[in-house]
Amino acid sequence: MCVQTVSLIQAAIEKVGISTVSISLLREVTEVLLPPRALFVPFKMGFPLGEANNKELQKRVLLQMFSLFEKAEIPVLEDFKP
Amino acid sequence: MATYSDLRLDHRLFMQGYPFSKYRISGIKPALLSKPLKQSRLAIVTTAGLHTDNQVAFNQKDKSGDCSFREIAADVEVQSLVESHKSSAFDHSGIEKDRNLAFPVDRLREFKTQGIIGEINHRHFSFMGSIINPQKLIEETAPAVASALTSDRVEAVILTPV
Image (cartoon, rainbow over all chains, first blue to last red; front, top):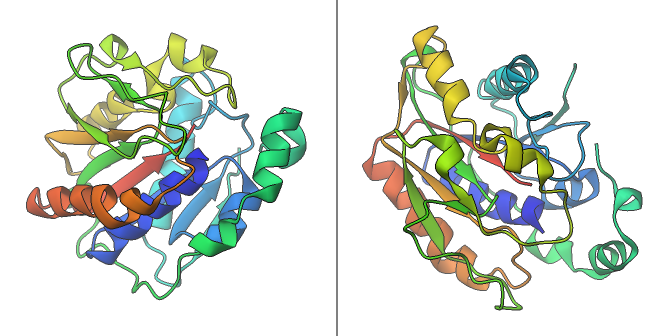
């Protein structure tokens, strides 16, 4: 249910004019909820940024999230490119 | 990527029967950054159920879900945070080892030093994601966080589920 909760909070924040990007860990949920900008990651539940103590991987995920801030056509659902 | 087929049977059956389409998001005007990210103020919102050890834990006993949130100061020592999210729907071992996995405050500090982001907001926000009935989240607590972020003049928010 975390993925739905994130999408609903994200909608409330985007609605007041603040740009948002979220991680999705469950494609089925995000494709129905359609939050403004989401990055699908190939990691299991509980591991949104990839691996514990893997700074480089965590940074790559975050940098790809950051690139979605530029997207004006929402909803944007992009896959993480490792 | 997790799919329903990766979930434990009881969780999978629950997810397959849940009326997600009722909560589909539509009609939102895209909010765009008015300046580059390297000049913008960023905050994190997570649903990992993290909080400081002197904050009240999230309520696991509320079957419809605890819609409350905790504010976490940006200068927190990340590994000192407690995870009171007890859901059996995900593996907690990663966050146990490294809270940055869901709450990447150390990574944001590195990005700020590198000039990739402008500022880190003085506070971040944490929810516990197991919310079955999100009514109060939609009507009260998510708008309260949005309003706090507005008063902080935050320009960009990243959100992480677990």
